[in-house]
Amino acid sequence: MFILVGCGNNQASKETTVKVGITGSNDPALQKVTKMVKKEGINIKVVEFSDYSQPNTALAQGEIDMNDFQTYTFQSDWNKKHKTDIVSIGQTVIAPMSLFSKKITNIKQLKKGDKVAIPNDVTNEGRALQLLESAGLIKLNDAKIPSLRDITENKVGIKISSLDAGQTAKSLDDVTAACVNSGVASDAKLNPQNAIFRETITAKSKPYVNILSVNAKDKNNPTYRKIVKAYHTKEVADVIKKEFHGYEKAAWTYKILQ
Image (tube, rainbow, N blue to C red):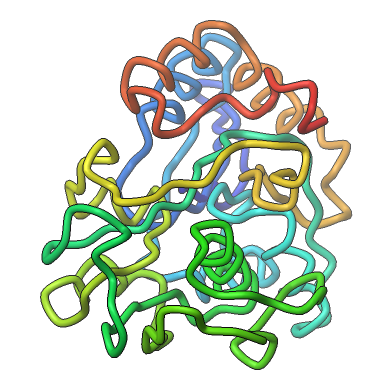
């Protein structure tokens, strides 16, 4: 994910600097966008954050201009809780959440008492629980964004614990399995091909599409719109395909996600 901080004009180079916030390490797709918009006099400065609680705070406080780390659902929940007015100006990637393990190689090997870690923020927790349900491990009620309280049946008898999303990959030494977001998995060098279960992209996946976000007052900013336009190109889609080997996909190319 990435963050754009402080938009300002450099009189000498006539460049406009945009600070973009991300979580984790830099993103090759954003690197490609940075090169593309450089030709238009836009200088992207990436600001890295260590967890999901920081980017929106920095954006709302004007420390950065844009961020690229969250999903539609995460953004909506954040706005409600923090009374912010942050909006999406474009889709980036859809990154299926995966269930990883260092102790088993097949989801059918999970047994009663095995510990499974999931992210503890509302939206990712709900997504992880839906992943476990689709894997046939638990049943949930019809809550739009489920929580641990919405589990109606735990067929296998696994013990589910929640922790910061950024720590899920690190927890694999202590738990049997963990639901890990793609960005966290990538930073931890987890091979998506070794996941014991992964999400399937459908129309229901739209809430989990990653987006470029700005403060509502900036939603029509022409400079920011140029960044979105550069992102939504075949060149960037090709970078995503090459670098992530299908682990992350260009969301704007899926009609079912529009």
